[in-house]
Structure formats: structure tokens, C-alpha cells
Length: 144
Image 1 (cartoon, one colour):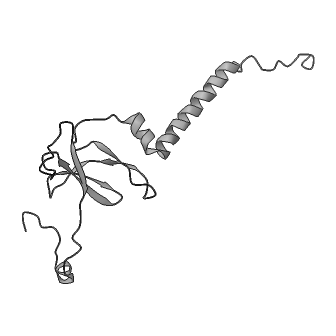
Image 2: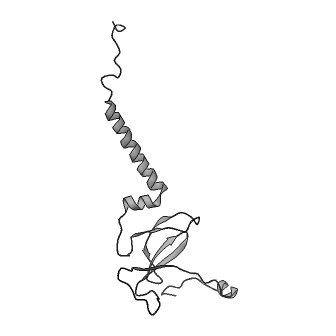
Image 3: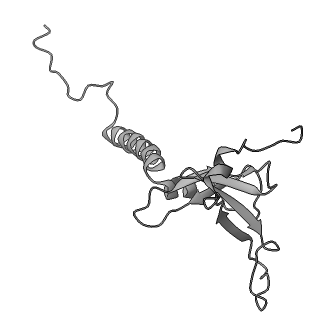
């Protein structure tokens, strides 16, 4: 009896061919989206973040280095306890944000509306005498 029955291919409980193709495309696009967010910082910034006109603590900055100088990254902006300015760390270096009013400009240049400010690398002192480096005790807080 069982040999006489014809085996139907595809079987009746298998999904429709179009449903299988749609499921394959959905899973593939989902995996590709997550991989693109991991591989490309600009793609992650474009798809999961929105632009803002204000610089404040807690926002993320997309830092892009010059060509062949490392990878770009999304850096979280924090508040510096020492200078009181907004800072972020990129490639193990600290950067500080200066408002438009704080930026030293040429006398004929004004603070243009729409100009948000400037980001500068915080420079460490490298031209002091060796004795001054050896006698340094680090940053002092208000109690010391």
C-alpha cells in the first residue's frame, strides 16, 4: 500500500516558494544590516542616530581621522571636571569643544550664526624640564 502512494514533492506542509524566498530575503537583510553597523561607522551613524544642532553632554560625535590614520568611531561627549568644557576621547586622545564665543578668531572674522564652535586636541606639556615631570604629583583636587 505505501509503495503504491505517490510521494508529492513538495509536501503539503512545506511553505510556499514565495514565502520561503521572502523569509530568506528578510533574514539576509537583517544579518547584513547588523554586519554593516559593525563594519561601517558611517552606516551606523546614518541608520541609528539623528543629527542635532546642539553640543551637550551625552551626545555622540562621529570622529573621522585622515586617510590611513585609523578607523572612524562614534565617541560619547562628556563634561571635563578640570576645564568645565565638553570633551570626548578619540584614538586615546582627548578633544575639547569650544563654543563659538570662545574660539579665538581674526579681528575681522565674526562668529557666524550657524557656526557651532570648534573641536581642539588637548595638548599635553612636553617642553618642561625633566625635574618638573619627576616632581609632579598629578592633578590636585580642592582638598589638597
